Image (cartoon, rainbow, N blue to C red; front, side, top):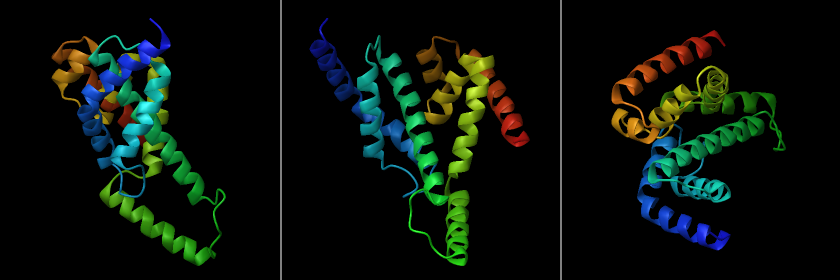
Length: 183
């Protein structure tokens, strides 16, 4: 199959699944405060670009699982960028008192209405460590937490039983809580 054929098939698949991609992106964004990350459509489009580079989708499930992973990485990169900007990465410097008040207000808003970029990065780093022990647990977290899939959807996507997904989800949450709590 030529590259053009693959791109055409991916475009057809994406068109058919666009509503699902928007739903996943909306769930991803809902965890973060408005303005702290990308808009839903921008997140879908960023994911689309990442998915175009990957290709080789074997099924709808494979595509949606890859989309959840792509969105996770986009949100992590956005959180990193936000923290870099917050720490003076190329921005206009304010007075110390002004910056402290602004940061405190932003941090309070993030913690009250969503996850702070630090929390997103802590989760990502913990998932990287968990991947060394159990890649399947990371896949379950990506499906359940990042994409918001149900146990049944996650089981179908990963080729597992609902009971295995439930057990893996409990294990992963406990492990992540311990790891993030320890940091």
